[in-house]
Amino acid sequence: MKNIEFVLPTEIEKRSFEIIGKELAEMGITLDPEQEPVTKRVIHTSADFEYANTMCYSEGAIAKAKELIRNGAHIVTDTNMALAGINKKKLAQFGGQVHCFMADEDVAAEAKARQVTRATVSMEHAAALNMPVIFAIGNAPTALISLYEMMEEGKFTPAFVIGVPVGFVNVVAAKELFLDSQVPYIINRGRKGGSNVAAAIVNALLYNME
Image 1 (cartoon, rainbow, N blue to C red):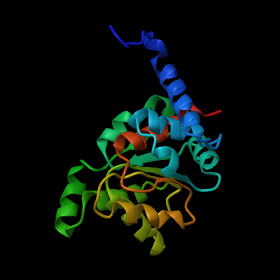
Image 2 (image 1 turned 180 degrees about the horizontal axis):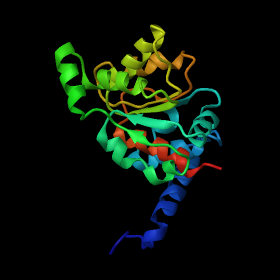
Image 3 (image 1 turned 30 degrees about the vertical axis):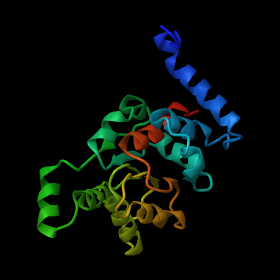
Image 4 (image 1 turned 90 degrees about the vertical axis):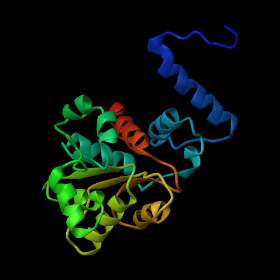
């Protein structure tokens, strides 16, 4: 078949990363070595090279996230899709678990009664876990806003925020809240992101644990 490259199933991902590296080089883009595995996996997940320019990392973010994982931090997502995409077996090796409260009946009932989003209530439930939590937010900007409001009120401070919600309403502004905060973060500026991107970031961290 014309232009079809034969690649063994076990080599497809490796070949994909080789292509990503080659195309980044052709664009004249050099990624920070510590951040490179994360940004490349996001590009691999999305086939979107714009992430090479829009991914933002707080100082020492990768080392801090890995330290949290190594010490058994749990991960909270804002979608069951992100939960499904995260390598839970790998995370469990370090004592961590992944949670998503979005579909819980009590969360839905409370959100309806208060006329707020389920993401808002989910973040409040996550704050009650009483352990270090890495938040992987790929869909709901209100999740980021809720976390920020709890911080401002002195109620709760997340250990780490992965903020990559996708969309058009409050998405950009919600991400910007954390860029000047004291919370370590991985944020993608702009409208792009998604549950798949949030899961990809977590997996990139897990796959590159020393």
